[in-house]
Image (cartoon, rainbow, N blue to C red):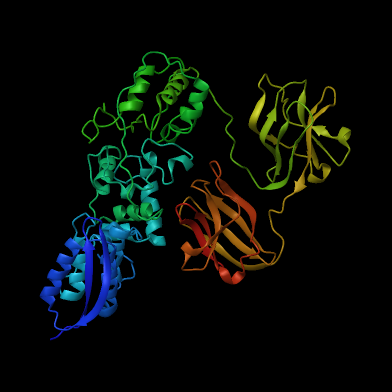
Length: 590
């Protein structure tokens, strides 16, 4: 059978790597075997921009070959079919720099682990000369190439957050952030998982595959069985990490493991060490170093301090010596390399943990209690008084970010009505303190049992001895219940972090949440509007919902719906982790 193909007259200067397309004329009787030889010879002698031009014209004449409705090796534009545009795009990537495949595994047509000229040639041979189709992608490679579904991301989050039932209390989040380290709340001993799928090697260059690196963590730190590549938990974790960005080549990372050169008592700053501890070691050893289910208390002996050299040894070299890492000295605690925790930071932590009693470096804001009914901002009149005052539904006045130099004589909270300052009443304890007084502190002051809300509408910090006012504010109502008629509503279905409660859409362009529970953990968690079936295509509204433990307990709050969102743009609501793009709880509004 005669085959009608275009033939191109091409002149190429191998020294200057330039070529010129001079003519295109039809030719009959070009046999398939000669075409194969011609393609290969052309590839060797004419690599350059005109190579792409040739196959563009070639493809216009010959068309495409469709494949089944799933991604396959060679489908670099991810449109679920093999066609001439795929080798053209690979050529554009190799020689023009005008295209970058979102997944190198798909562009690796011959499965050689390298994307080169042989890949478009093999794909062309399959499309037009009857050569075998590229081999199938593995399940792992498919997960690398495709954005995760909502279900995959949710399952991956469960794998990331939770220990293996057969292992110890460690999970992936114990050592690795899911966001860039610079944006994370806590610094962890391992590098962020962002970009991890594109690294050329792992574990200081000892391993070549992401799975092998994960299994080192599982076997030697999580103390559980390794995964196989087809295991669903591993594939879901891969999808979660893949969801942050397409897999792109990133640099290999090194963890320097060696003992500290410091010995004996620390010369570090215990106050700074406390702050550093609470952004690093707190993940396992807990607030105030009091311990958690993952690690013991470090203040168990109130008299004898921990040995500074022992602290340094455990921090720098803890870990099973049978792993791929060198210089580890035993134990399950994750080690902290110099790139993850500097010598200065370590010495500050050693100074903090060596003190007895252990230094309390900061006032920990207590968890929110009840619903805020009225609030106001203190105006500073003297003594550096500042802060936000909140009247809670549980009969408590809470003052957050409270500052006051602590000077004076018998200084107490004061409530009064209107402008009638002198007819008010004091309550709570004397706030006088030695320097530096109160710095960004949180006060929770119970109100007298017989006091009703209509008896006061102002709050002050006042000296009882001489009547002077250090700071005051008016308590203004907050619309926690929302006004308007319920248009649509739904009960949140719990996915993660204990999220549940009732959501009501009001005709005043508000969403009212009531009987709301959420432990307050996560990374930038917002209210999310979306159409059912397409949660990834939604919109965030309202403030960040993160809160210290225990988070939100039987709470009520209202979020305004921006004017640009009309009711037909959404029919579902989620409590949504924005960076990870996962729902913690959701409902369809009926």
